[in-house]
Length: 426
Image (cartoon, helix red, strand yellow):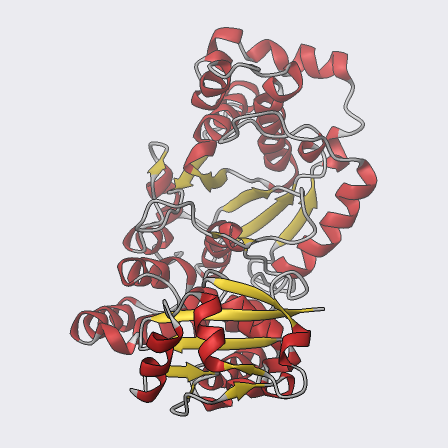
């Protein structure tokens, strides 16, 4: 008897909606379930982590997970959640992206399990060579235009000025055909995805019922946003990737460490394997002493470990310890910039710091941290100015290139709240 995976997903807040009977099916027998992943890049990003964790939990509860990397549908593009037509990918680009994604999924899924081995499949295997006339005869006749127009993803696009192309309009039928093919090949009776996939998923359930007389099911998860209403995983610097070449493990760790107090507990439920009791304890710690950020530290440690391994966690924690102390100069400039990417900055020519260097009083005025030289001098004498986390109390102090982080960066701080970067150019 499988453990209660539905209950597990539910208490973690990962069930947005499910078809009637899905919960009973999951409690009754081991099932094969799948999630599709978009191959528009050679790496997944943190926005993909919720479905990845859903597959991993499915396997841990004795069910068989399948990850579809959409090499076929990726050539067309899914209109769900999109406001405009996407650039179509070449076959070569899709193949390159598939290789990167496969390696990342292998960190979460066990493909060697004798009880419930995971699979990765590419829907290009059955879609690219599909006979159009046969597809229209055997599949297309089961989808009325009215049925397809009623899907929310299609209705939203029809309201846009550019509308929707026939290419993307056909996506719903192709995803439904994926579900049918996985049922035929592997006995797959469950599809999971984000809530924006509900229309595509139920279309697949309908197709399997019509053509095979079998009841298949769907379960969708919420689309994650931050407490401030921003789409999860988006920063001013762009997406946060799982590929360490795109987003360094240090910056990845910092992304989770900087989670808003309001989001920390939900993210612990979504993105870690910690149990309910442990997460309740961290929630209590957050409420009792939010300044300690214990929930965020645990979150950063757990997720970075899953994606990049324990050695990456150790290095990231060591670097974080240096970041807010005098040891900040042991970090390289790129690591510091990654953490302070949203902090105000000023670019100055490196030549100004050569020889005798630039006076700190002048620098405070140039960066706007002080309104005048007199104010800057008073700030310094009062002990309210820090350079690279070291308090400077000499108003005659000067900064030279060799004092900069990597010879190209200074972190200035006025009091406890105002941080400013000085980036050296040339």
